[in-house]
Image (cartoon, rainbow, N blue to C red):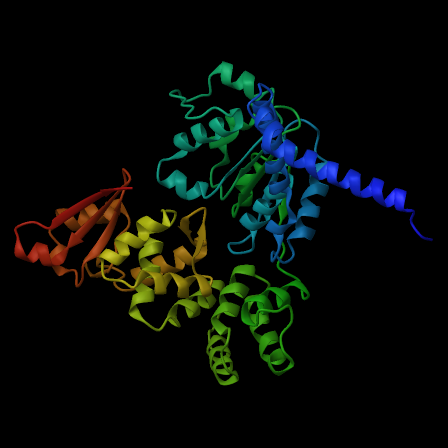
Length: 434
């Protein structure tokens, strides 16, 4: 059917008017809207919607094998808990994915709550005496009040009353003493959800309503995760199928072991695969530390191994730029070392901080301890303040074979130079605030 000239004229004329009005709005009306009294409210609404859409975006969950099914199980547990403050524990061995699952749950559902916060690495933070600081940080986030400080042991009544008015989502990660947060949990409003992760089931029994035990990756999930790291795809190639099954069986469905082993074998030939898997088979009682140790031992150069050990002993959780400046100043090739360690899944950058898994840190500490099981003066690194004090007060620094860093409390790093110690009556101590 032909279109009449009159209709074409009307269409083209309207189109010109629309374009003209649109340009006019952009040049004039827009400036009026964003300078008007309502503009602040409009911006706040837009920012709130954008944040919620961004948090709920499924893109954050891409590459997390098996997480969706585990989140569904947590939701089923939540559905049978009374609708007051619902408390769910996530329990399992190290490396099984407790923090990953809790983080995915948080990213998926935090937009549905009036307040939310994720507190990571509480066991480590507790050891460093930072629980009060974390409590203040948590209250600031939940109440949307910057730099809120509570100088008392217990939360003041007026703050508790404000918390009871809000439905919040709170994640407490790697908890070894949940009693420390009991008084805070009790102050949350109806409909709130608290997720607690721990390796200790007894800790969870004391504070949560239900416990979700994280199971190993199944026979569909484990090959997929391993293949993503070893082959950058979802399935092993036929030529490597048998070797892959052997490697996957050694990892026993542990996500961390699968990632480290897969990253280590990436882009290697069959002969290398066979050699490594035969070495693994020779362990009398294979455990996850053995698998993680193979990834560390395979680091070929001293530079990368030293960077890994220094991060594990001193710099985990610190800003990337700060760590790089320190290590560069010690003569390391930090950029190349970071690149290798990230490719091997031994470290990661998160929120511009250098992070690693607890098990990898524990493995690194064990590597250093084995340098000298009974003589601290022969260990290349000391990170426990008591050990540092013992070495310095007993004048043992002169026996240490190389310069080393001490991680001290009070947010300080102390660099002890052996060369300076031998030249002067006392060692050179360089203090740097973190």
